[in-house]
Length: 243
Image (cartoon, rainbow, N blue to C red; front, side):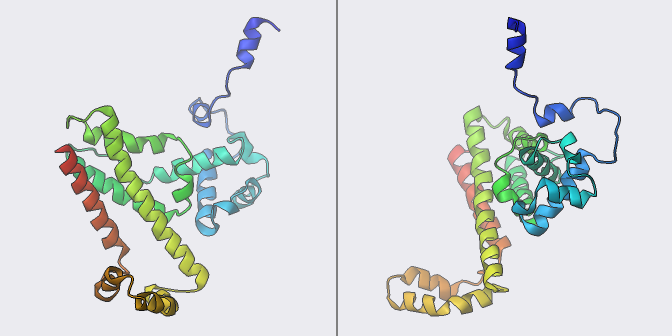
């Protein structure tokens, strides 16, 4: 083997996105990356990420088991296609100079996307795709011109998106637990947990939480809870950075 051949052999393989960006060969079937992504997303939405296998995907697409491998090398690249596909749903076509309005709208859109595709709460952080990278690009553009350095800009972005991710993970987790327990709503959940909560409150150790239990009126209003928390995050950023 010549030195040149050895160097070529050590080159890392092209990524999924580099391969897809090349001119497409003449199609031999109607199968496309978009069709693959749409079928996989539908399967994950209906049955969870664990249900997405190359064999199940082939069945859903009505193709031979190996057909999708023309585009993806396996489940990891399939997951990239899925994440990219759902991020394409985000309304990122406009970026204004009002950083707060832009970040608030982005947070609401990310929450809606995550709730529509709950598997993204876990999988969405594992991929690096064109449409996913458009999210920080959108946010950074809105934050530009406010005197923030690059590191602070990223910190602001991550503070907002981490709030979204944590809030949605809690919301999806509660929904999953309620579904598994057969509790259709908040009233049924509280009724099922009432004996345990009654005993805990009777100990007198949790007076502040007891006040919440008796006075709160928005226990079953996740939209209000999310947006109120989001405004607190944005208020904190604005006050801390004077922007």
